[in-house]
Image (cartoon, rainbow, N blue to C red):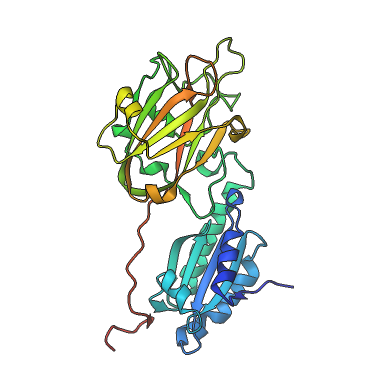
Length: 327
């Protein structure tokens, strides 16, 4: 029996559907908002049902319908200002909207999204599309916003000159320590004099920072391998980097102790932040205060920042597609 679009009975049902998508396989949900009095809505309804029957994939792509007359709270939350409106979600986040009865555009954007999902595959914590590598799953509803970093403004103190430059920390490819087929490319950083590092990270605009992902892969065949980070202090909205004395004397925005069990098989620790404190973050200082053992140095392979860089639009007056304000 072919699948059909599901009528949403409550916001709770919709929220549960969005939460049920698994980021590692890039599950997707497609939403249409309709109303019985809307002619264009009735015009596209059978086309939308056909698309749903042909493209629904359990746990991957779902199609739902929401009656605006009944669920105005949902329409308001997602900025629906004309009818019909199609809202496409990926990982519980809005990625695009299609306004009006335009089946060609609707099918095009859905097919494009599904193709992107297919290119990601279903592996967890492995390579993604376009060579991107993910050391840990993303928190549901949030995105990798590492590309919001102003790379030229980054600064790393106490780095060993024999390791890579600071920009390698933010590369999207798999660390060479995990890819045995690679050479000995120096795509990591390591401390010099002791087991401390001070990393200053400015952003292109204010972001909401939710999670910090740190990857550390000390070599196992080294007689004196560096340590993984053990204690980390975070500071935000500083115009420039601190020195070590200043960092030691300043109360951090958040202090973190990483336990051995926090590291997964990709060498990555997923560190949740006190989200309320990181709502308008223009710069971040990551102070590795000490390593997790007795080693004299500490190593970082990748740093990923997870959160939200988007800004919600102002909601306008709800109108039928084609109507002009004031009619």
